[in-house]
Image 1 (cartoon, rainbow, N blue to C red):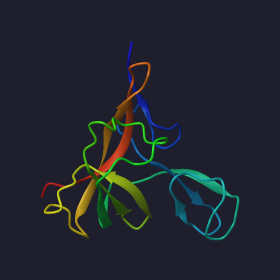
Image 2: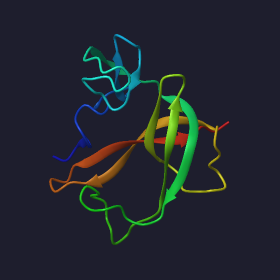
Image 3: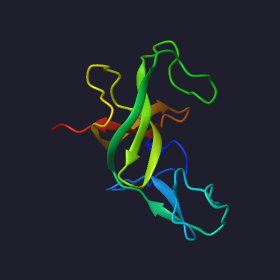
Image 4: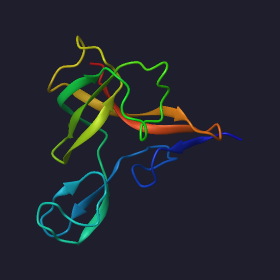
Length: 141
């Protein structure tokens, strides 16, 4: 039976009623890192602990991916590719996350706008499973 599976183990909590991105926090300098790492890029400490990240933040910058990414690793349908937004979302005072955006509408996306974490299908694998990834979506005011 097909099911929903995470695009990569350890990137986010899945399955979960309240899925979160998984980062790490340096126990020496306090830096928060995404994705999770065993070492700190700021101070080179190897004392990091897993940390579930917040689900809201502000759009730091963005662009539109107007052509299919290189495959592999892109596993989407190249024949029916539709442009999508990509950007960085700064999760409130924690970390900037490079992310797919749920819209590619340049009239909607504004630097500094409030965004929230969503989980969306990336593609269907050879076993018929819906492979899930994360994205950020504008918060409806």
